Length: 61
Image (cartoon, rainbow, N blue to C red; front, top):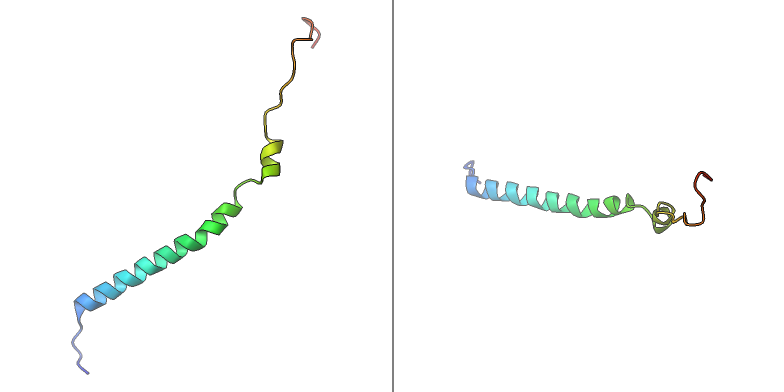
């Protein structure tokens, strides 16, 4: 074995490792971020409520 360092190969392996790790972290974050989304029930509870105001007389409220 030689003690010479192939800098191009080392740089390639470093970049490949960083890219692979970044993609892995990104893919692992998708389910976590999806779990922070409100459920359909919570969205329904926050929906606007319609109130008929036509039957109210002036000063009644």
